[in-house]
Image: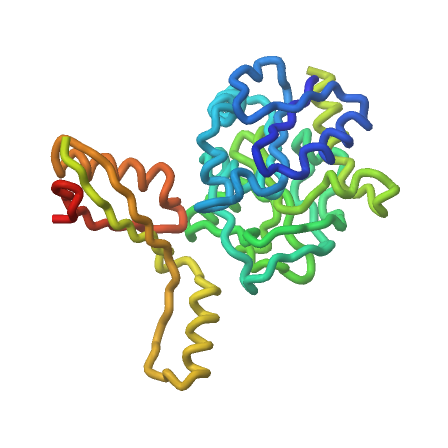
Amino acid sequence: MKFGIVVFPGSNCDRDVAYVTRLLQQPTRMVWHEDTDISDLDVVIIPGGFSYGDYLRCGAIARFSPVMQQVIKHAEQGKFVLGICNGFQVLTEAGLLPGALIRNRDLHFICDRVSLKVVRTDLPWTQNYTQGEILTLPIAHGEGQFYADEDTIKQIEDNGQVLFRYHGENPNGSVNNIAGICNVKGNVIGMMPHPERASDPVLGSTDGLGLFKGIGARAKSD
Amino acid sequence: MRKYQAHIYVTLRPSVLDPAGTAVMSGLQHMGYDTVEQVRIGKYIELSLSAQDEEIARQQLDLICDQLLANPVIENYRFDLVEQRDGVTA
């Protein structure tokens, strides 16, 4: 029941995530990108930011960092991984999640709050939400348009791997309004919106807190 | 070991939308270049490497492109390879 938050050069939401897990009284440690031992962790969170300057492609270089080789093993063991924003991009680059995040449809960096519909609630992550519930979470990305080829999209949909869809306006052109997905097993999830930025009433919304509570409760019961 | 210079072109797969290319095309059309039919924007990378022969250099480049320089989910790549002799491009 221990959280680890990966810190790459250029990560900038790492301390925000740690603030939330510590708010929930979950043991939490920061994991430097050169660390090679994360065997003490139950949940790894890859936070938002601009890892390695987003050079080449977002998440492309982070994917080959020493810690990511361990995160891949951690995921293969069925342990939990959450990628938020840049973290989602890293997970697709690493092949832990399908598809890719490409330039927003309208080319702009979008910093806004968006409505999301919760699609699946049978995973530890989303157990505190109700199906079809509408959440409002912040987004802040230039490359958040979820893309995969037709066959892959069909597999994602057939397997029920979509966790969140944009509700109402699609901000970035994502296929099927996809805002967050999981792997087939459901232990690895990635999402472009920032739940950690909506987890303390002082920030105006606690719609994101359920995600951390959900996984924290699950990790505790293990 | 021989020295090679690679010119690598990374382009979006045809099925992937390229909003930046579309914006540039619309700019060109506004400028009066109405013969322009399509613009796709990609990346060009120069890389020098040493290898025993050209075949090994090409194998290495394929690995490098598949693993890092291009993301096969959204991109294709191709490269030209030129052997360099005495520091001068052959």
